[in-house]
Length: 332
Ligand code: UT7
Image (tube, rainbow, N blue to C red; front, side, top):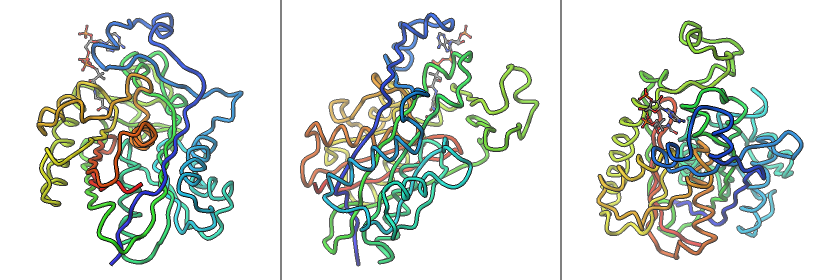
């Protein structure tokens, strides 16, 4: 029986910083509102004249994770990317990155699971490693949400941003590393957060007509999502702790999806975990969907917030709806 453990982390953030002050000059909003209601102060946005496509960002994050792991890319058996903003409808960003890495042995593909894309990808890789089908894998989350945002819709454009994060996961025969992954979805609520970008026209055009959106623009019902987010995140975090007979005091660090500081505070409160044990970088990066957890994980790792043997809880929630959790013992 194999277990999987993370042996390298990396992230890539676009150069261009977009501040709340700048947004004030574009739409009817204020720095005060954005900080108070979301916790976001700045976000990073891809530029056309930089090498900042989804593939570019995923590649940069992956190279850093591979370097930390101390492996060569031809050792990878799998490359799985969580993304809702691939450069092409097909082929997958996974295949684009595989080509750039010359990871010739790897099976590569994308996972579309909204903001839970990274955790869904991690769950698949963990299962592949446990079953003996894979020894070493690259798991990443990458988004270029700036390309599907309606920059006149103040209820979404102040929240969403771009970035990428990646981890290298390796098989071990020791009983450590990733202890569990849980993934869940409920398609009944698909229209709380969606974009019809992939189809080029709206699946339900009547939903879009009223708000003067281009067909591919992202649409969100923030209020209803907010309540569901706290509930789903809390339940799946509790499920993860129960599965592993771990209580909240045992958790050294929680790395939640960075959608809204008030969602994160609600989660911490429900789990009875003090905010000092919760990793937060939403103030710098906003909501980068499936990239948010691997970016935060990489930063926490490089800042020395993770010690060997620490129990780390990661939880995500997003479009689909999807939500997911994982508990692992840190082993770098
Ligand atoms: O990534 C995973 C999925 N995403 C989420 O889970 C996001 C969940 N939702 C949220 O984070 C929050 O619901 C938002 C940040 C999106 C919105 O915050 P809120 O406190 O729920 O605000 P609201 O939608 O209830 O709006 C309150 C007021 C409204 O004005 P009125 O109708 O009361 O006059 C909005 O029009 O705030 C207004 N508003 C804004 N004002 C200034 C909405 N966006 C803005 C803005 N600047 N950017």
